[in-house]
Image (cartoon, rainbow, N blue to C red; front, side):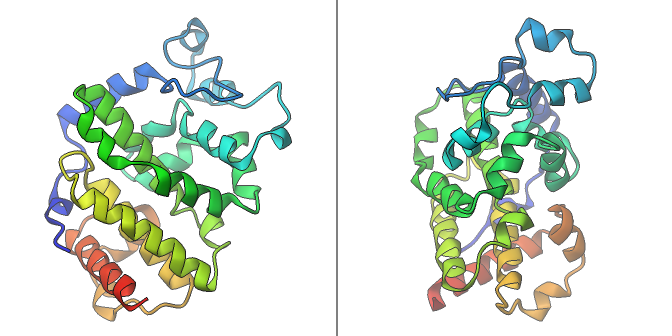
Length: 251
């Protein structure tokens, strides 16, 4: 697989302007049993004066979290007002961690026994090709940031640690199937999305005891990539994705 776009900039001034616009739109209108009453565009949100106040306003209240299914918890997390703001940080991993810091909906999701299975189901059933039918740049950006955000959740070691043996191989094949779809949609999915797929493979492969070639482990910038998904050396992503291909072929 040839991934030419991993060399592209992760954040341009134009994309930053788009992201600021996206954040002002808030959640994407999906009907859930619980929605965020205080979010961008509401008087409630405008009245808040700090990030901490806005994080607190995003907590799920007035409903027993145990009554929400695992999938509902995940979908609610994906509609969190800060969910897409990970891209405003130098590190997508740190950005997502900050976005969901202390959020009771995500904490409840991760604690569920079927969290990984549910995440995989939601991810694999999404048809990424529908982005080609979108004509509005804000809608496209909103969509791709959301699903790249879900991919970032897949790098969470609290989730990856739940996976073992054959289950891990199946999980990686599911992610690889979506990776192949993204290679046909490179005009929509950017470098962060492909780097995230590479990091999921890297982290889970190590957890499961699969051998990562030494030439990858010794590359300059591998520590920043592994811990923070900061890409200072695009050959790391290219090499990992090629190794990901070979892994799937062998299994």
